[in-house]
Length: 452
Image: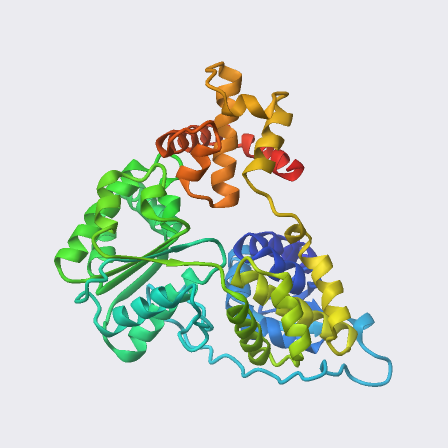
């Protein structure tokens, strides 16, 4: 049966959607479709040449990998302009202020560094009060890997604040300066999957050699070591950690919270992580947000005046990822509609793209949503009662507060009748076990969150 390019690309989009931020997917991929397919060439239909240039610079390698996975063979990727997008008498024009970015070099990354983004460098990192310590420590690690007191270096903070950016910048700068020869950068999920595969294939010795014969190991998002029953993964990481540190090798970790607050993480790992430096990253202040927007707009060749920059910086305060997502949304809007970016245009684009930011969800809102879902009063969640239905609802509310608000465990516990942080940790573990036993329960939590 002949391969249908529309079906193939639709399947690819399902995979890509899970790999990249939601806003990036909606801005750059939802307007694409499969065009044509042959033995050697796959054509993707895009709205205009600007979309083609942007996708080729930023996502061509990822698209190539996904197509290889779907087709089982390598193909050349080309971009075609949708017929309805072409003006009748002239070719598409660039948005005002657009400067075409340089083409990627196409060079393959070293083994162990395939997951690095070219943009995640120190040059592209905007330093502010909220990330100054983490940035300085990262530079110190590059200059003296394994020899400073920053071993391990643990960078922690909320979603989209630049932890991954710094971790990858460390890897790229270390290679560039030649301070280390062998680096391995992985997510905790990748580490776990490779370990499981090594057990299945009876290649655990090879796994150990891969991770212990490096000069620098960088593990992103270590909080996922706590998900489900991963005792063996934590054990092998513990011994990997010890082997590297005893041999003077550098370890860099990132997490969405301080190690002591990672429910399910073994005490001996928490102890090891505290041997080095814990560097937090906080949400950017106004001045830093402005600088981030200016740098992103300049990099992507988009002309945005200071009034619009200030407007966006006032509207988006939570994290860097959404600030950069706003610039990408404006970039796409300018390309599609061939217009200048004014404050009115920015307001409309942000209204459509960032509806979720209009409502701040805190502990109180989550308590009310959980209580309503289970037909209980909010007061019962803080009461001393041990009724099973109340205790379970309380655990769910605590878990959701930890996941959504990122408040400290101590503060969450205090809002549930003065309970201590260990009670919150136990609640989080209990709910995670419920999800492991019945994955559909996550849908219940999603419904509660939507009602908050």
